Length: 238
Image (cartoon, rainbow, N blue to C red):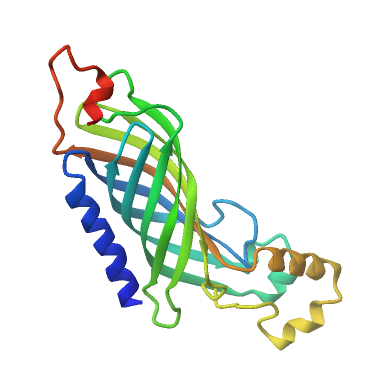
């Protein structure tokens, strides 16, 4: 676990060195929430406050790569489920996490942080992350983040935006339930039609997931804006 965190942090640090002329340092604020056995499908159910920092290195008008560290909480309560089986089980959990991620971004439109003309872009993102659990009873896990976002220039130095990124973890233990059924006493409910529907959903969504959604603001570092008319705005990304 420690080696994984060190590797991810080393990658982020390397990006900051390589991208001094094209770097954005940003902060994120929003919510985090969980999807799993307790809540298979309902987005934003029991969302809790989340925050983080990130560093983005821009390669060209379309591509950038980003390293981030986001803090959040995940929680789930069976009593909020529409399934009778969950309400009978009445399980709940709350987990504090820190997510370290390295991800690529692809802009659907040409985008330059310092530009007036190329000043906004919707984007998609995907990469690899490590979820560090702050609960000693729950092990950390690798995850695959993917999502969508939108960014826009506020000033020459400042950018802002919003994003919604899911993490598919490599674990089914974040909620403390594991593989279905987690308790022999649950077998008595398997003949119930509602429980059968629940079981089908549980198998489809076996690995636990979590998501971060919110807004961010970033500050352009070490940039050089060309004033000479011989340079067009696309060249300002170089």
